[in-house]
Amino acid sequence: MEPLASVSFVTTGGPRTAGWQQQLRVDYVVNKVMQTHRGQSEDVVKQAIQDQLRSFGVVPNGRQVSQYATVISQLPLLPPAD
Image (cartoon, rainbow, N blue to C red; front, side, top):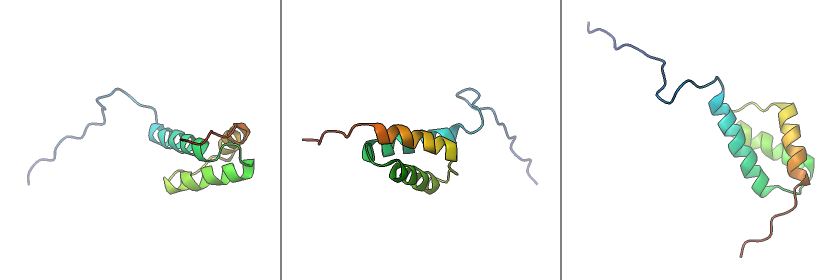
């Protein structure tokens, strides 16, 4: 039998905290929803965030989603692109 290659958990970019990939996914979804759902009702925004987070494999945190939805629903609509 050949010896197994050693396994190292050291990352080249420095140490990262647990859950950093999940936070990147949350940030991406919130930014995407912010562009498409601003000014809509809080319930619609909340549902859009939850649906898109689940499609990325992230279990949404209800309190965090509610906070994002409140802010996004209060944003003014974007002017139409020419």
